[in-house]
Length: 233
Image 1 (cartoon, rainbow, N blue to C red):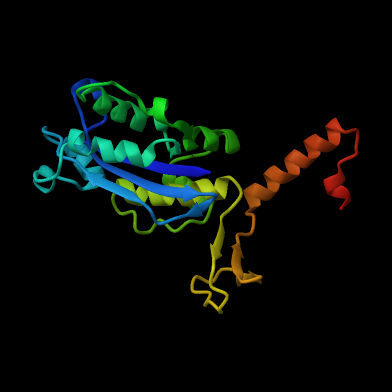
Image 2 (cartoon, one colour; image 1 turned 60 degrees about the vertical axis):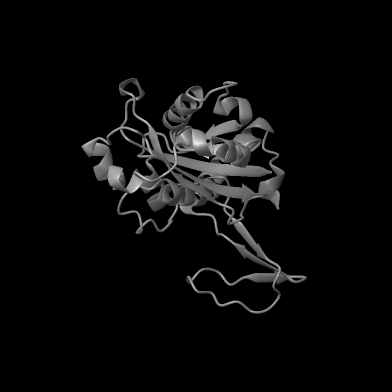
């Protein structure tokens, strides 16, 4: 299963005002494993960046002056994401801007939704944590993910953080290494478990996840007339 966590930065917030994508950042996940095959592309927008947007991401027109335009890199970008499930936080925003860029291309028109399934982590978070803040920063705090590097927004950095959030939201990440030798526990986390030469580091469920699991078991117990096998183990 191949998934691509995607984020963008733009010249401003409103498509109707002709704002453009200036950075695309993608992180690849295959079978719930971060592969390191990431994608990052800065783009020349051929328009000024709003001051408010520049304050958010710190990218200016001078930096983008020698960067390619979207049409020059569209082929590589579409090849990278094609067939994957896209994981996006507030997907309507990023998809809207990228579809706008695709619409400007010459030749056959396409949309992201024609190439990929799209999953919105903001919708997922609102379902799991109703009534709570579900920004990327709030989710990083809730799932104990270090976002101290995020002094300004950046498409690749935000995609990397969102990838960790997504894996935590959907059950935690199992990290595999083919090395059977000892490994230092550099981040203070649990010691890896060795199984036939594969080293597994298993993430322990947090309080929110345990509560959700308990609620699900209660639902099963009610639906089965008190015959929830999981609780009898």
